[in-house]
Image (cartoon, rainbow, N blue to C red; front, side, top):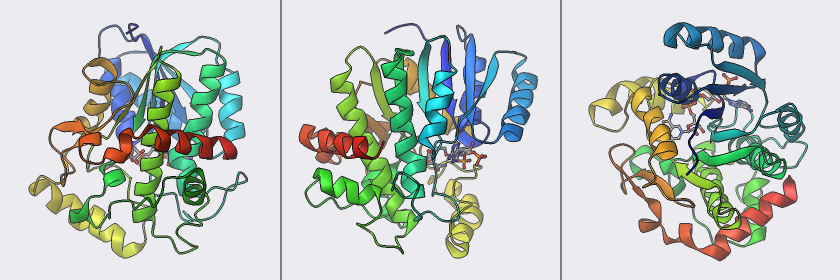
Length: 307
Ligand SMILES: NC(=O)c1ccc[n+]([C@@H]2O[C@H](COP(=O)([O-])OP(=O)(O)OC[C@H]3O[C@@H](n4cnc5c(N)ncnc54)[C@H](OP(=O)(O)O)[C@@H]3O)[C@@H](O)[C@H]2O)c1
């Protein structure tokens, strides 16, 4: 594995992305951190705060809205030096209108969590601008968290058409519940990462869930009752029951995925079955679909048709 000295993080101005930037800046050997964000004011504020907190002036803002492939391509075109590692962290439940379609014909929730990152990785690889590791922020929702009301995503055949129907929302209809469709999006991304690992053996592709993490804005766009449950009731009670951990613990999982070679390329690591926190394990032991090569390739092909 190449030594990692530079890292680009999407969604780096808040939550887990920002905390990962802070932890990386304090790590020996890290010389450059790109904060890829969609909002210039929030990005500059995060950069100033991170410089202040870490005493290091190694942060550079890259403006990038991951729901817009054109913006992602333009941002990559501005990069002049290869980056060692990328953390594909931007994501969430898709804003105020998670089921609305983007210009590319995918739902906002899918664009935010998957399609923009697909385009980013594709561009970086084509331009030979990434040298070592790509880490995707997965979620336990990809194999279901029944205790938190997230069902296990139900793939019928795992065909290219089924993955396209997940991407454009037709599998769920206009009222698709973002708490459920989010899990499908994260599952498609983990499968795509598996396909990429086989296609590009010189790069590590690790999917790592940060685990149930409190103190982030992750559930702010959910409908009122769900938001109250997750943020205000859950945010207090779930840590007490070991259902959520702090942002430091969540972001540390990203760093483990980047630097610990025990985390293998093409694999998806997250908490044990039934749990959103605690030790991480290879999720293919929970859901064997994850290591099905045909299903991985179908997910990748479906994504390519929207990019
Ligand atoms: N928190 C959890 O319990 C948990 C569990 C498993 C997985 N995850 C995953 O971890 C990642 C980070 O979650 P979080 O809890 O830290 O969320 P968060 O606090 O809401 O932060 C999300 C970050 O992503 C950015 N972002 C959102 N949409 C974007 C877009 N279209 N383009 C560029 N940046 C965008 C946000 O920027 P703005 O400030 O501009 O909105 C923000 O910086 C997500 O992928 C999430 O799915 C979280």
